[in-house]
Length: 346
Ligand code: ADP
Ligand code: MG
Image (cartoon, rainbow, N blue to C red):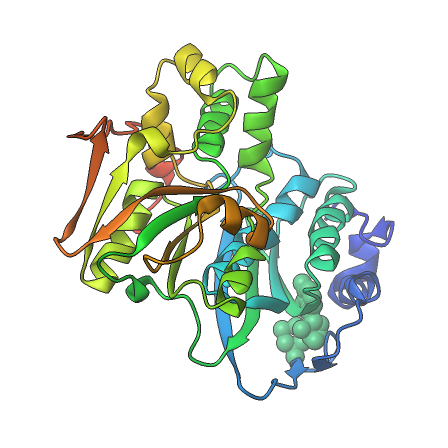
C-alpha cells in the first residue's frame, strides 16, 4: 500500500494495528458516556436512564457514491459522518458516538487518510460524537461506512409514522442545491461562486443535526424524516407510514440560492431538483396545528425553517401552485444509478 499519513508514516510499515493505534490517538475525544472505546474488543456505553438508543449506518463507496475526480478526502470524511448525523437528528436524537469501517485499496494517494480523518474528526468534535471503534479491511474500492448512535428520551423519537391529519408541514434550510451541484460536477463544472456553493452542498453537506433533538425537547413534533432522496419521495414515506396524505404548496418551497440560474444553465427545471433531486439532508417535520410560526421555529431550532404544506386525511402526496393542482416535474436524472442496484440510495 502506498503512503497513508494518518500519523505521517507509511501504512505498509504501520500495518493494521499501527494504523488503529494512530486512529485511536487522533480520535481521542472526551465523552462522559463511553467507558471503553477504541482498543478493546468492543466499545462500552453507559446508557442514560429514561433514554433510548437510536442506531443508523450509511456507506460511501468509491465510484458508487462518490468519485475522487470530483471530491476530496477531507470533504469525504466530513460527509461520511454528516449523512449519519442527519439520520440520528431525524429521529430527534442527540448523537453520542460512531463506529467506522474503512475499506482500503492497496494503493492510496499520499495524505489521503490524513485528510479523510481531518474532515471526519472535525465534525466528530463539533457534534460531540466521538469515534469509538471500527474495522479496517482490504477492498478494491475505497469505502467508508459509519454506524452512528444517538440518544433520545424514551418514546419521544420522531417517527415517519407520527404525522396526523391537520398537522402542518415544515422543512429546514433550502432544497435542490446538492442535486444541482452534482449535475454541475458531473457535467461541465461550476462557473461562478454561486455554482461552487451548490457543489459544496453536494460534496460536504451540513445537515441541521441538532434541529430534531430541539423539536423533541420542546415537544413540538412527533414526525420527521431527513430529506435524502428528494422531498417528494421522502414525504411519501412519511405519509404512507402515518396512513395519511400531504399537500405541498410548491411556491413556498425554499429553493437554494442560485438554484434557478444554475438550473437554467444546466437545462433542468429547478422545481425538479428541489422536489426530486436528493441529498439535501434537510429535516422535513410535522407540527400540530397550534404550533408556532416558521419564524419562531427558526429561532428555536437555530436554523431556517419554512412552512410548506399540510398533512391531509386523504392519502397520497399532492402539490399545488397558486391554489391549483400541479404535477411536479421529474428530475429525469439518476446520478450514478447505473452502477447501483435499484434498492441502493445515495
Ligand atoms: P477485533 O479483531 O477484536 O475486531 P480489531 O483489530 O479489528 O479487533 O480492532 C481493534 C480495536 O480497534 C477495536 O477496538 C476496534 O473497534 C478498533 N478499530 C479498528 N478499526 C477501526 C477504525 N477504522 N476506526 C476506529 N477504531 C477502529
Ligand atoms: Mg475487527
